[in-house]
Length: 472
Ligand SMILES: Nc1ncnc2c1ncn2[C@@H]1O[C@H](COP(=O)(O)OP(=O)(O)OP(=O)(O)O)[C@@H](O)[C@H]1O
Ligand SMILES: [Mg+2]
Image (cartoon, rainbow, N blue to C red; front, side):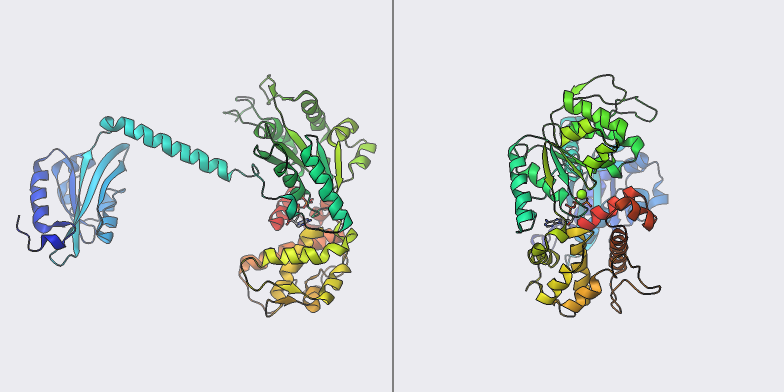
């Protein structure tokens, strides 16, 4: 085959292609060639038959218009061959090879592709293995992204050195060592979620699932299915059986967040599950054993609810074997310094030097009553950061401006809750405004989230979702 400088060329030359085309012209296998623009320059009869097209109709057309999954544009673009690939066409799987060709100067001038197999039969074992690997990969990805099966907090993440905070940590350590139910009581933003995760992470069940369920965030009609699962055909639309959170947590820990919001009928069912160690998926008529350690949390006074008959006393006793009361931030003002240090390090992650805070700013923080507790503190610091010119030290004026406008006072009409004059990405502005409105509503209602949600004109579950995002 005549070729001037074959040793310098890494692909086919024009002459080689001519020879190939002559061979493919007669062969049973489909083959197609494209020019530099990935337009069809030649196609053999077999390929036309397979595609159901006439040669005259496709010559000169972009290849992907005729063969939608073709990767020829990539080959002419990169100059690299795709030696073996599986291409889907209609419902067929074609094994194809694609080779670029070059002119005498080594420039790509086109590419040729041919079908090696139009029937995957001989490759069945290989394809079956490929499919299995692919399915395993998908399943692994899904389980990694499934929310709430793993923990991200340890006890060291609960920041505080005051006697109250140290007492909480001591109790949490004791609770982790014993396989007993735990009840976490504390206002919003006091760290109940951190503690629940930390207790699991330091317990003997650490390498088993941690499954969280926020009772207040799930519509009442779905709670039972969510907790105990559903058998296939239990009701219209339940085509497949679905595991409940109890089954998902089997062997590990179930975190029942906002347990004080649980409707009474479900409380009776939960009590039975805890007593018997068995669940009955909806519509299954069968019981399944489960082994879970329950950690419950609430921002409401469960004892008072029980006294009023709104929470079952027997369930209260069952959940409240180890009780940990989380102090409100205003009860441990001595921790403000260490909390600011840790939250600012988190907020300025990666930046150096880190951000500091002045003594006067800390004193200003200590005068606030923090209905949203540490979550609110994190928010105020975040906002203060947007108010200082050089992000090195947060001073008192920045804190004064970042704090909500007076206890329960609404902003003056027309006053902006956002840092004046600063242009920021819209998403950031919206996020700050939302956090601001939520903190103001919690402030106005003394931390009562049901009333805060109604003041904000959103549902309780929407408020929980937003609070969750603000924690992240
Ligand atoms: N002691 C603490 N140390 C460090 N960060 C804390 C502490 N307490 C709370 N936080 C932070 O405050 C935010 C809220 O905490 P968390 O979600 O644990 O509160 P919560 O008590 O579950 O609140 P809610 O009742 O609203 O669900 C999170 O960003 C968390 O990191
Ligand atoms: Mg929480």
